Every structure is written in C-alpha cells, then in structure tokens.
Image (tube, rainbow, N blue to C red; front, side):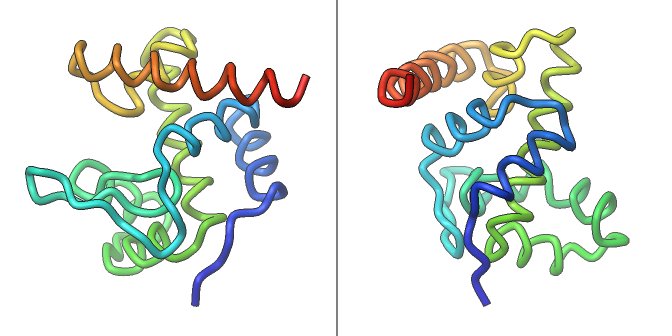
Amino acid sequence: MLIPVTTACIIAAASTFNIDPLIIAGIMKTEGGKVGRYSTNSNGTLDLGPMQINDGVWIDEVANTFFLGDENMARQKLLNDGCFNIKAGAWILRQNIDLSDGNVLEGIGRYHSWTPKHKTRYQSKFMENYNNMMSRNP
C-alpha cells in the first residue's frame, strides 16, 4: 500500500529534526522522487521515494535505527510510505547539517553528495528550486 506525502508529514519531520519545512519541500522538489518509485544509479544502487534516499548508503542505518535491523522493512517503507520517507530524509539532512557545524546549505549539499563538484551543483539546483518556491509563496 502506498502512503502519500502530506503537509502534516513534512511539518512533523521538520519539527522532530528542527529543520525549516520549506527546506524539506525544497529538497523534495530538487530530488523529484515519488512514493512507490525509485531511480537506479550508475553504480547499481537505488534512490528511493520522494527524498530519493540511496539504499547503498543509508539502508543499513535506517534499518538499524528504525526497524531493529530489518533491511527489507526499511527498503519497503522508504519506497512506499511517503511520510516515513520524509522523516528519514529529514533525519539524514539533520545529520549532514550537524556534520557541517550547523551550516544548512552545506548540509543540503552533503545530503546529496560529499564530492565537491556534485555537492556544489546540487546546492545551486536546490537554491533555484527554493527561490522559485519562495517567489510563488511570499
């Protein structure tokens, strides 16, 4: 069963991890994922759901943190439960912001990649999407 993303899910994740909900919405826009869908990367890993959470990087930690180590459950929830996907994405983003000494834009870039060229490109794409969202909703 697919569970959609709702505004309430975004607000709950934002509150839990002390992140502006518009930042989460901006990452969702930048990632372009959807509930029940995945993208296959050139290295064979999958990016799952709305926040496009990479299974090769995160499935172990998500499984251990939220599902007592059950990787199959973690994968299914990340893929098919939009609300959980947003929660996990916000959890990952919070870790990256913290590892960036509280620098939100650096954390946003690291959400995508720690490789400088990929990180910088993602930050630019995020800022474009974020600014477009803000200009439509002043």
